[in-house]
Length: 75
Image 1 (cartoon, rainbow, N blue to C red):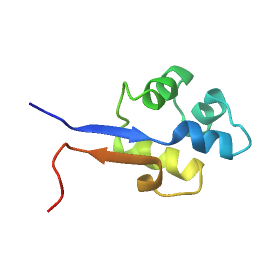
Image 2: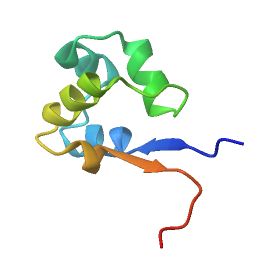
Image 3: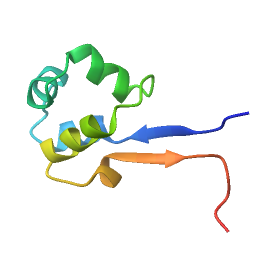
């Protein structure tokens, strides 16, 4: 069974950056608003290049935007 999942802080970051809309973020990173909606809702994991573009849109790191969880406790 695969317990991998990715969470994100995109909604919070959009709010913290002047209440940026999903469309404004989509335009900045070159995708559709529906793609941002799906990523934000956790229904779609972005490609690595897109994850970097999203992070750069917020002037932060990929790790600050996305968190990886695999269901395995760290040792």
